[in-house]
Amino acid sequence: MVRNTKKKIKGKVVIDTELCKGCKYCAISCPKGLISIDKKFNSKGYFPALFAHPEKCTGCAICAYMCPEIAIEAWKEER
Ligand code: SF4
Ligand code: SF4
Picture 1 (cartoon, rainbow, N blue to C red):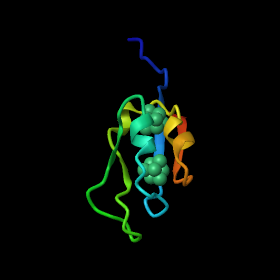
Picture 2 (cartoon, protein in one colour):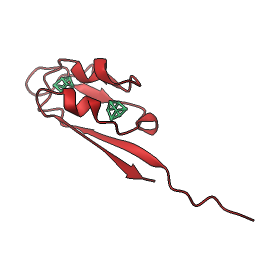
Picture 3 (tube, protein in one colour):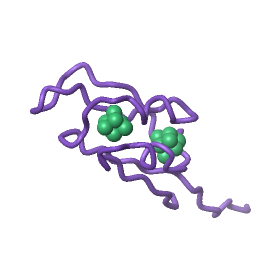
């Protein structure tokens, strides 16, 4: 039996919801539509970005480049 030992490259995104001001630039710019806006507001009264479906993320980091508050970290990792 031959096993496929090839690791897959997946994206990882972490959003600091306390830095987020809810401008939606990240949600609009994600080519896969993986970021939405939360229904609960943060301590500053903004509705922050919410990252969903991490299994579909490529780690392209467009969302992080678009964020004016530097609230998003995005990278690629082997899984
Ligand atoms: S890293 Fe790319 S694919 Fe992943 S959430 Fe951000 S914009 Fe979307
Ligand atoms: S671009 Fe940054 S500040 Fe704007 S909604 Fe996304 S995480 Fe929040």
